[in-house]
Length: 128
Image 1 (cartoon, rainbow, N blue to C red):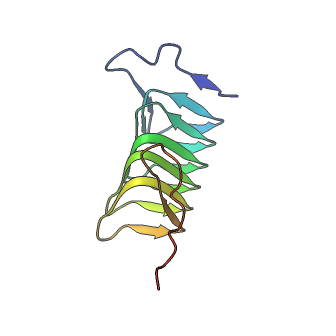
Image 2 (tube, one colour):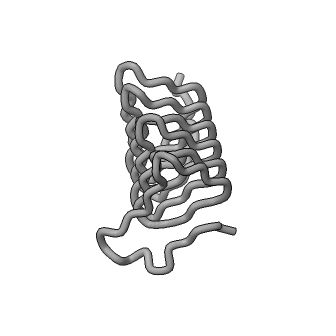
């Protein structure tokens, strides 16, 4: 059950912004999401999620594109691209189609690559 849910996610140009002074406890589901404050709960976007420098999420994050400059303590699913910038921290597992980790970023966890259908790719047998 989402605490906040955007009714019409198809509207262009709409953003849900969690301000720098906001401490949110609960799940957030919306279109494009920008986090500048702190969230304790699941964050789900139908498009993109931006975790800005100084922001913190204690919970799972799922979106098409995820850009992290802040801190996430939880698992991340990026159906397209995950970009972990120099100030970004992930302490959890990630499932991504494309992963970019820039120098200075911190990633503690496991990474799985998604296939075109958005499913985790199975390990291929090593040919002898």
